[in-house]
Image (cartoon, rainbow, N blue to C red; front, side, top):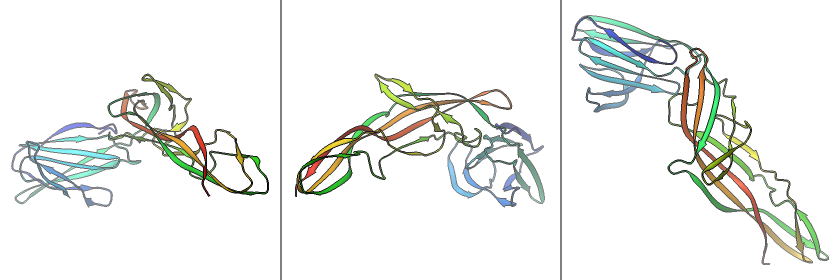
Length: 275
């Protein structure tokens, strides 16, 4: 079967077969997953896959996934997209009294995708929230009052972080070794999103120091004095829609998920601590 996944029906020729095991060809290990009745009722989860009579089995691990449906004298095998860097193959072991039958299922390696577009919008539960964190503390002991220049955004934890989340299978593989840079939102005004140039790597956790190049002047009195900064931060959550082009087929693949960012807004206060 092709790497993008799909469905095939396999005729068994007769009834009475049971699925005794599903075995990964790599390592020759039995596969774990979930067992269901034909009506969708879960029988057992995260167990060695086997099936008496009709029903279906599901096996899903990072990068791969399948469903095997047993209906009378046939099997219906559905594969999700193969995100592994190698051919994925497994054997369905069937038994009936003293008879054994093995069916080999093989799935090709994904040739990958190229980036086409990225869009963001405010969906359900999306938006901004603002909060305040204490930043750098300054301690002085001067002989005479003076103006002191400080960097209000100094400190090791003043960083912008951003990341992507998606529950879709295959949301984060097949796009050039996880090195595709995508535009990100820089402003949201009345629901309209303004984008940056391609900046963050899709699927990666971005962490970068926040350096706005701001210097503040503090009026420091003579003697001991303590000051600290309060920085305004913003949490932003938006829905993203990523469109990719399949290198083999030219077909488009659309992935949706959430983009999340936490960053200073650039607003700050410098306050004095009473001695």
